[in-house]
Length: 483
Length: 95
Image 1: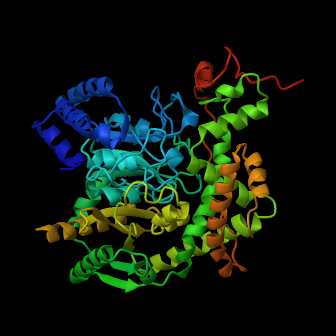
Image 2: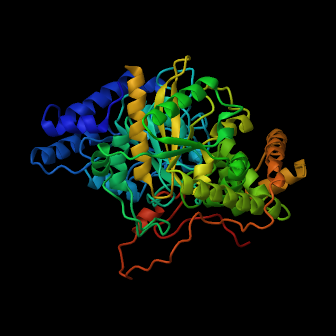
Image 3: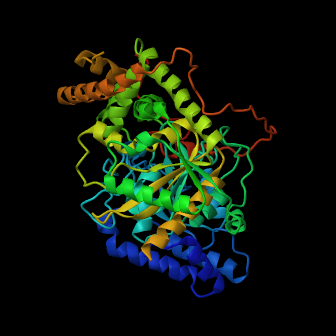
């Protein structure tokens, strides 16, 4: 049973459980399986127990903040003062944060409890959580399979019952894809909706902070607290953050008829037929409820993968230039007596893993003299076409519906030596990052192989509320099927 | 366009990475496979399209110029592989 934040919070506020009991439940689950699953790479036991007492005292006085009852894991990319941050990379070996990320600060101020640090692909680069200096994270339901990535540890830590909310980051699908693989909800908010201050950068024009939870409402409750403008991140949107939970409850009784769009090419070759069938079942259900479903051709979408991997690796090659063996983290042991230039090269060559090096090389290549216009410049133009298609689509429909992933959770080792086939796993998630729009994965039942299936909902920039609203509609449809 | 081994060593040098011959050959294969897939972009007509650099136009926001406590000096040096009480330490750069 996957723990739900809002159910836990209700029990806590009604006095039928205590925060100490909830933390103990988490620690018991961790002790039972984390050695094998490897979702959490750091568990703050003592701190969690003392924090639980402190927050419980506030609950008892009726002064609990909006995230009291939340037990978080956070991806290894977030600054959390006096706690380790390693981006699952040797290059940040021994690094300890000296300040809190804005999202961490907001969680703590709202009485959320941070239980531990979650495994991930190094610097957020990967789709299976196999590229980690801490070793792979495994799917909690089948240790032969991957939990997805890059925020694999975040998703697995909820699916395995270690916590009831988790922070991840989504640059090309790194929240939605593991959410789909692990059978939970994962939101990639609009670009700029949530501050990136204190998030280790991968590709800054695409990076977003995302959240995982058991239900759409659990995620909405978290986003309500962490979203919004931040003076430390000039890319944050000034749009007001609504009270999502209140709005969801208010709208429940008066749900108007919605218009959904599907791009037919998303449902053609390469998609697992059972995933296709399950999504069509949901679309039929929506039609029966009086909603409209229409086809919208979006031809530029098929270029998402190429566009993304040019732009993301270019940005990564620049962002990761800061890891030099001088300012923070790992310095090669062979640096003694070496020239400065060699300290950089030795430390970086020993400190970065294979996928990170591959992306730095690709990014450096597409930015290099003679190739810049052919690759980087071209990709920036196609990016505009992809974004334009969404702008036009959202003039006709309220939300786009598509798969989150072409397959369910795959076997470990299956794609790790074939970068292109790993990248193809992100085919449905990349365009949302390229366009800056809102997107969320919601579980809709299971494949005959036993693994969960996710559906993806996409709504316009700043329309997280619309995304949550559609998400709850689909959750209800999906739970009806189970009965 | 096809990436040569020389290209791989050149970009590795730009990126301050050193590769063994085996790593360089592997990188060459990977890059060529990925880049030939990316050639699909050439089939898209972008002759009248402006490049997109940011997903939205950001307004320049001003904030009051009030000083905030910066990260303390010792904290800034805390994670350095080598530092003295005031500075990051690097190998001698002047012969």
